[in-house]
Length: 286
Image 1 (tube, rainbow, N blue to C red):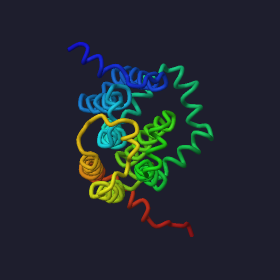
Image 2 (spheres, helix red, strand yellow; image 1 turned 180 degrees about the vertical axis):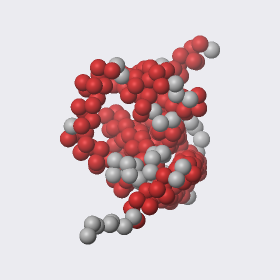
Image 3 (cartoon, rainbow, N blue to C red; image 1 turned 60 degrees about the horizontal axis):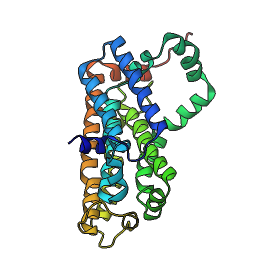
């Protein structure tokens, strides 16, 4: 029993970069959530999301993702949809900042946030059109059989693929789940609710194409050695359904979270006040 447990806990491909990044985020959140007294529901969402990321990237599950198409699709849905959605729904920004020592916040974090490179990056990747495009594009690009082959043959491209899926998920869900009106939020509350319906459409189409394909689109998994022995087309069909149904369900849940924030803003009158300020006529002195 212990040997089986260790097999699953020990990473298939160890990464110091991932482990250091993961531990840094975990320690900062743990410190900050204690200082700010973050609610239990938000803590639970954050830690479940972090656990999903660790299980997907730094356990033996990664072996199956590299040796079976439908397991790879499960990994990508977890990294791109579920884990970022859970973590962004916990609104971890304040807790992560509070986890830093006060001197670091004053001497490092604030100057960095005001620097032009940081503002340029925020302006580009925080743009709703860019974030939405990348969220969908990274799914479709890595589904191209030739790109999938490159990722499976080169560990550097494979890790880059996983980081792009995770990063684009974080950026997109941060915009959709923003609880502020616009401005300062970058999306209007209505667009936040509508956006998941827009992004899930090409994913559903791609999933349907893979599901109903009668040829092996990804023979690279045969070259790498498949983890299971059932029919190749059956595994491909299951992978297409995973892209199609669970991914769409997760995005629908994200839209419901955005709708809840929209209703909360409306109840507090923040949307109406913003509208009145915009519509207020300018009175000039005679």
